Image (tube, rainbow, N blue to C red; front, side, top):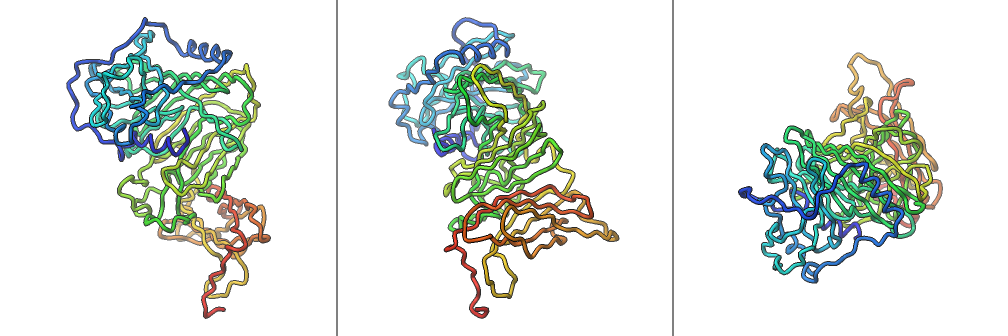
Length: 536
């Protein structure tokens, strides 16, 4: 499945897309189980993953009946899990319930789902009676009895009508923030993303859902990951309180060397924003699930990298050692900047990754893919360890994922809240050569200064090529912050990317986080100077 198909399909998870049940049916028939009970623990799951890594990988087989493969999008959406079949609906004062996704449309690989009760796991059997087939045109009784499921979603007692977490498709999963809105996705693992060959998409092939303690706000989910290159054991301790937090532990067992391993991968969409106005044909000023990559490095520096919709695939690696955190954020939460009252991009959750231990040397990789379509997930970010990945290894990683409106970790310095770009030069003066203007707004931290403070704020600008001119840093009272401005003059007519770094300082003290950017000059034939007639 490519990203475009996946994003279209998983819109079923979003509150803005999915019709919600208006009533809760009476609870009278909990989900069925099949087969004998087996002892389960995370240690056992790691042992299973290690054992499977030594076996031939056959891959999950697509074996859907023709009628399920031929469903339209509306027909697939018409299939819903019956509320009277909700897992854990029989628990008195339960905090969580689970519903299972039906196979069909883009979801052709069955996954096995088990329930864990008191350390014993039993598989949940597929039964068409679990589903309401609505106007899908499907006769559930005519489907194979061992059809299986596509994934699952979780509900919390905050709102039994709206799901909070969903695992569906390959190793993808999503959650909401306080806004109760779905947006970007996370994955269990990324393999060879952004390389000049097909990316490998591992699958979660089995899930174990642990029966929750009604006295706890945590529900635990386990997953087995399988692909041609590796297997993996995953544990998700999910807490729905002030957004969704997932405490993740993973153990990977490579089958073969992996060139680019992506730990804690995030997948998002960026089509157009303040710094990239390419979609001039669309009536909305901004269209994106995330507007930047935030990084808190092992040395304590805060970096902000605004996202781009590039002309061609772009790959950047930000080297680090023992990162403190990173994430794809939606910092701009002003509805007026989007004007979309259908999918509400201003409510999309940010996702912050926080390692639970030292990860050593590596890099935070960012891949940006060109797109003309907001249904295409074109942004990927993850941690890529320096250590070579070899068969027989055991790779252990632990981290927390925060699905949030605002990340739990914020810089004490001022943050970048807007990046705008456009043609450079002096207003009212004829342009003799091409340059590109950058205007960067910083807010918070030490801003605004007290009226009696005599502070000289200056921009510190680094560039990998070209010439910097017309620099300034001045107060921006509308946001109680500061704006840095400068022009970049390309060194020649080429289109080699130019790397930029900017922060503001007073004396020797930094006042802001560091803004990092990669600007690609347009081809020479596209460098129109736009001089008005009276200046020619």
